[in-house]
Length: 86
Image (cartoon, rainbow, N blue to C red; front, side, top):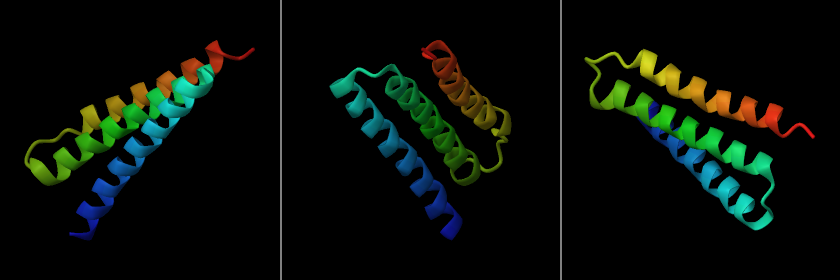
């Protein structure tokens, strides 16, 4: 029960971070805010897959999909850091 609340709160926190980063990007147009927003949007997706994996359909193993979404999210941030290095 507590674990479920923590998983959902983590997903909501990542979503809120993504929203705030995209709002800041719309105001300032700083590219790093955009890439960070994309990263947190991907981390939100990863957390949602975690909730689905462990709480909604626990008999199906979504470990690979969970980690793949997190990898893509972090890859976007790394790409943005390298691309916007100047």
